[in-house]
Image 1 (cartoon, one colour):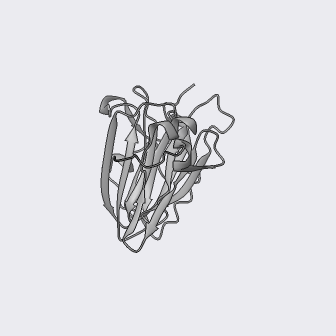
Image 2: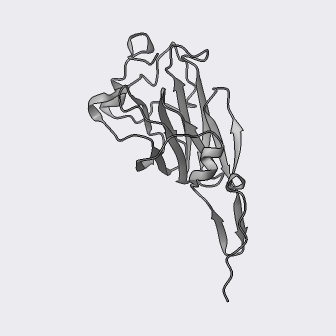
Image 3: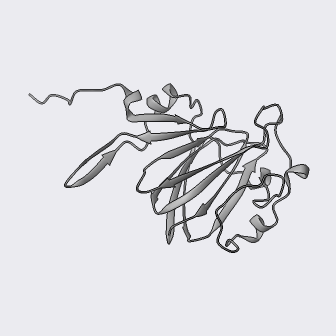
Length: 193
């Protein structure tokens, strides 16, 4: 007779680490390693719900970028997305900016280093702009989104807005797309209530 392995509470899959922005937090997965390598749960719906992520994920995205590429700061004004971001190879500085006008942390930002080595994930709830800069030679970034990409509703906040004063740790100019170079300042950006 074959028996199933013992079960453990889903909440044990991740450790929740709070940030300075309420609602934005780091998930540190429980990693099982030995001479063969490692194993971890990169997602467990019961565990993330128990830790405060209520959204239902509908889309997974994967980007690969070179050193000093800066992507963002992106958000959607309709079909608003929550994002669970992780890096499987390389390292990034991941940034979330609170765009909820009714929030006591409106216009504040949080930056977290995510890497294939630390295996941490960052939960960015709806109502925030999101972007990252690649710190390593290249980085593979994966993120789950709670709503579908809707280009007609996408907006880009200026990554270099002097009002925000985000410390990207730049060494020279970043590599950014034309769209990201044309991001708007917070003062004229569409935001959330």
